[in-house]
Length: 85
Image (tube, rainbow, N blue to C red; front, side, top):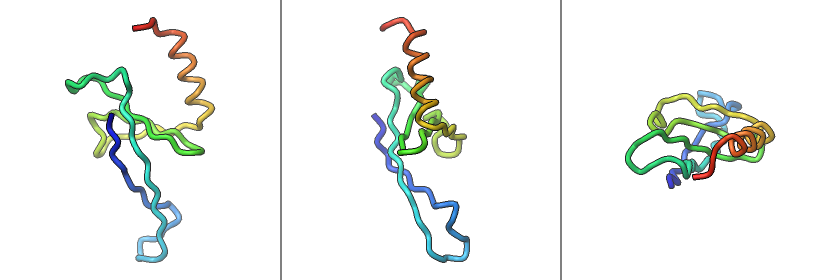
């Protein structure tokens, strides 16, 4: 499991060195991802947002952010559609 802690500067912080707030998220790799660099999905949960990314592009790739209710609905749908391992 990837437990890397990533820090993000608040969008309310300015670029002139004023008061800044940074928040951290911990990314967790999907249990369906293998250890050989295959398809990997990582998720970081926050109280009001769930962040999802492709671990192969973690450094500079896009991050999809959704509300927890949408993430829960997705997981419910995915578990209903996916045959057990």
